[in-house]
Length: 77
Image (tube, rainbow, N blue to C red; front, side, top):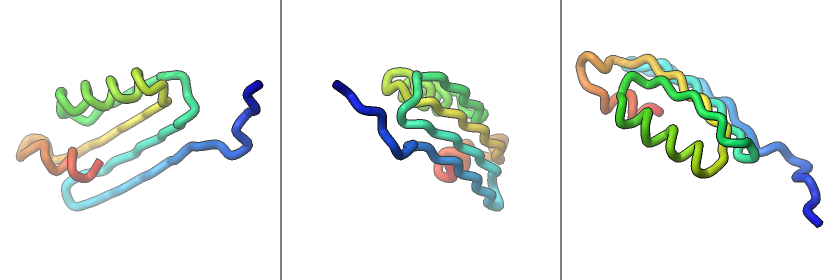
């Protein structure tokens, strides 16, 4: 018999740097609902795959200087 986890395993993180603005919501006990928008297609794909296959609820919204280079957005996330 499995008992419900009394402590929610959730996080909400906001981060602003010179290069980016990032918001991440994560629920480790979710159902695999994922929404990722970073502007870096392969990074979006990897985060979406992680959330889906691990059954995390994951929302990532990142606005960065991807016109210069995408690695700042990836590092800051």
